[in-house]
Image: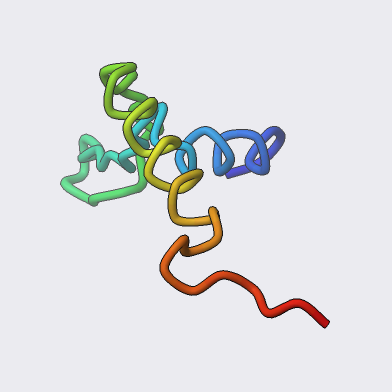
Length: 68
């Protein structure tokens, strides 16, 4: 990936898109890298993922922090 790869990775990490490398066959039969195929994922999957991460970051109510 060239320009914008940081942003594409961020979208992948947030589960908003899937990125798939494609292959092309030249006239001589040689297989080469093609373009990237971007697929937008269902928004509910990204929302669920974000909520799971936010919940995991919360302190555990069963083990409150000790007062100093």
